Length: 70
Image (cartoon, rainbow, N blue to C red; front, side, top):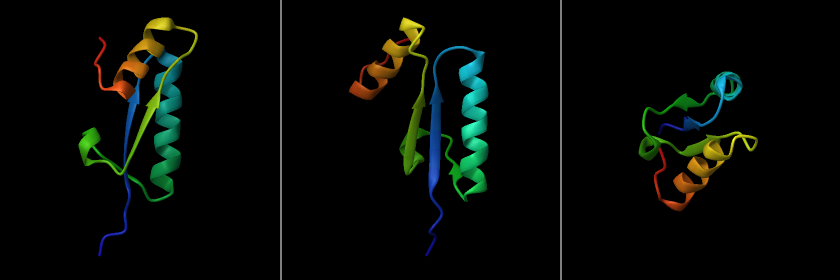
């Protein structure tokens, strides 16, 4: 039985958010998580966004509510 957990991380916002997401993925893969290419393939889905930039925050809330924002 495979006990490995998988994670999918979605990042909205600036380059700092991208950097933070890379760091989080590094920590989680060190804990044994595998990165899932698609959200539906993941055991855990993380949304990393910036509350300073309104558009990024709106996109994250849209994703959580099932509405897609570009």
